[in-house]
Image 1: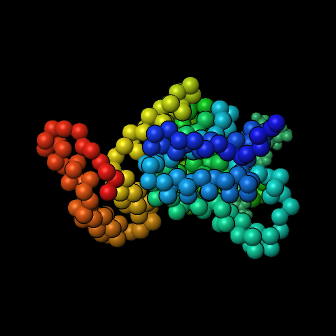
Image 2 (image 1 turned 135 degrees about the vertical axis):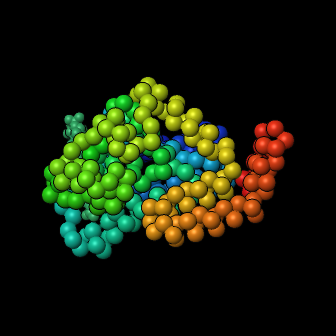
Image 3 (image 1 turned 90 degrees about the vertical axis):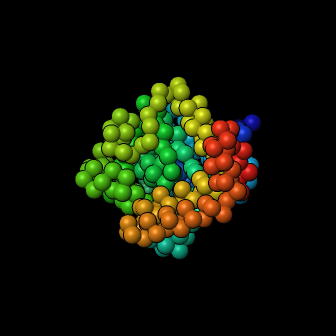
Length: 259
Ligand code: DAK
């Protein structure tokens, strides 16, 4: 019997692992996959036993973009009335826990945009990033034209968007598109170690940090600093923060209750 679920979902301790699985289409992102991804993300976000989420693909492709076959004959009315992209691609923005992309092979178009929507990107040496929509006379419409310049600056982003230039993992690392580069054979293991390390920290503190760093992207410095300061004050209402500081003073390991 064939398994046509577009992704696999599992947990490892406090880490939720989502593996995109449309091998025949290099994990091209269609509605079924994006619906399932949104559902899995929201379920992990609501689960108090999960502290971090990993999204990965296959050795050949994280995802080769939006599914071109599913998109080729859509009309303006279809995409407008059906809220194409907005309807199920934006779910990831509502996730409060850290989301880590583990990228091997192609991360193109919507696949690159999905990685950009994650909080941390761990790239295998084989990772390749591109926004090649211009080749289809389209444009990156799932956040690419907005997140890429914020991540790597206007000059590099324009180059990638206008010429479909593909970056290898080392270039992506140099330009600040990815968080770290690891050997292919170690991608999942190293990403899970990182996710496990993150997930062991106090969850409300992780959520506050993610919100604050995202605020740096989305607001002027003065507002961002104000937001950060309020978030810091909020930490003093957290039993974990008192536990963390006292454990340091007592020279023992903290026992976080995620409160
Ligand atoms: N969609 C559907 N099928 C795809 C696909 C995709 N994006 N990418 C690959 N496939 C399929 C291929 O058709 C092929 O299927 P079969 O022929 O075996 O049936 C299979 O996956 C293997 O692909 P290749 O034979 O091409 O494999 P190669 O190793 O030779 O090449 C490649 C790998 C990743 C370089 C190549 O497949 C490729 O260039 N793929 C297309 C990449 C691409 O252009 N991605 C961007 C898609 S456009 C919008 C907002 C956002 C977007 C659109 C609209 N609006 C607001 C309206 C976003 C658009 C995109 O992401």
